[in-house]
Image (cartoon, rainbow, N blue to C red; front, side, top):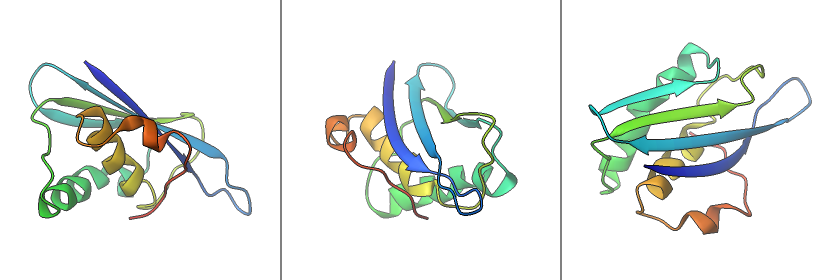
Length: 109
């Protein structure tokens, strides 16, 4: 079991509230779930992130991956969470150092 936390921001009008991207890797059948009331474009990011990691010659973990975009009641839209999700997967799987992510915020497709 491994957990990584990546800081990001949502866009709500002219405001940019913090979003915590929590990536949890666990045993079980390989699957990827995104929770936290994401819109369809955010749910589709699992395929974009998987393809990007493989094209960049990183390993996509063959484990159960749960991605939580918190807080759940905050609207999340678009592909702005692709980069923080990818970094969270890399950190949770030990491919990058999770401590280096703690002082930064990430967003981008």
